[in-house]
Length: 289
Length: 289
Image 1 (cartoon, one colour):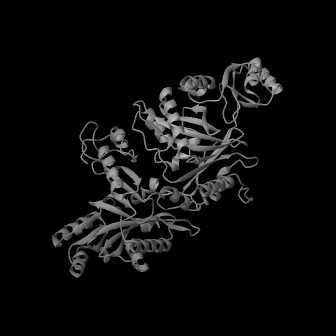
Image 2 (cartoon, chains in turn yellow, cyan; image 1 turned 45 degrees about the vertical axis):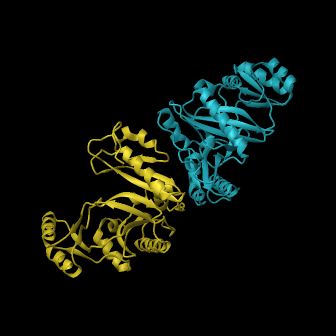
Image 3 (cartoon, one colour; image 1 turned 180 degrees about the vertical axis):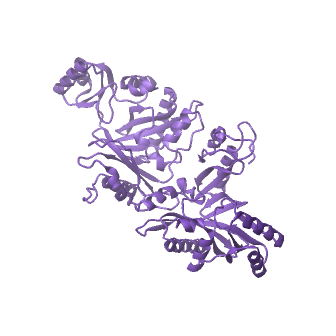
């Protein structure tokens, strides 16, 4: 399971063997492979490092032969194995978490929408605003993948919605950023169920505790190294649950997140965004919200 | 505030000065004082150590002169200062938590019912099943006491309901057993608001996240020293949030609590009771629920 989670080529091959809907792909590929793949599927193409990328690193959207040749040369020089996928016109990114224990109990968390910017998850909306049939399809697909992979603990199944269809994007066999909302938003959080799962204890309930939950990730910004100085201001936002990670601040790095819970999705998201904006605002400065 | 919270005589005197409804009392009292008080108010009377009692220790219901004389002699020998209160036919015990910060912000948690056995709180039901007018009266009384006491952080106001009236039983200026339900049951727990309060940060929301919340305290039993061995069984109860305190087990000592959250008060309480009963059942034995 760990190999599967760490190696995107193994993921794609296993998902293909399962018949899970996926973008077209090929791996490994060199310069000639990238060009031939684009010949068949059209530009742009999406190249990925098979191992080691995260938060948008190790993923490249290539718009033509020069970009492909540059990347292939660099990857060859650095010994990075590449895979290539067809570019998909994504309408929404979605995710389902599955909790599992060795006794065979499996539970899905609600389907969520993840809002990405430059490959980094910025917001998570639970439940995802999609038709019930699509949510049920995502749930069934995630359960099937979890069963086939033999995962215990948490498996995150990241999905694309494209043309009304679901495609599997990636798997992560661990508590996942798309599940942080579950700390306040679900009866048992992804962390609790990860432990229950690996200990082969009965799994906790995964349903939402309220109609709407939003999580907004907080990325480091230039010139504000100590988010804790802004904590009282962020906590003045009613219902904002602020989680500081205690990591060294760096622009673009995930340093914290804010979760809010309520009944109106728009209002819940607005409050989480405001608290997140306050966190990256030095005390006394005007908030850019 | 600390002196007030630790000394029941100071509490009674301050509450009387505030005009807060209280049982009749006198302090300090010796043998003669106990007997004269009973003469005026009738037997039984309730004697309390002014300092140091908790969980039913330091409280004695005295049914006549021999019991009063025995206690007075023992207290005099041990240098324990006593106060005496009139015995009240209690219909229900209730509690309100107030969160406060030095800036003057104050918020009340919902009125809860506390179910006591031998002076130990066994169950907490939120919200208390009382008429709204009584709940509002309790809330106003608790706010008044919090304002007068100058408390910051959490103040627990324990109340008696007797003959449709509220009487103040005791104050505790700290996160309190009657508020453990707030960890899962409220937007911001009593612990979070205690810290926000003492740091003079904005207080978090105190309302319930669901219509019904129940907490059942788990007391040590003879012959089962390791509750953690029963944890998987207790966690199999859907929605049971189990908190083990990691204290050395001793019969009658509070070792853990279970909280459940839901819509039907009776069903929520039944689940919490079942999980609590499973925790004190050695694995493999039949549960006494």
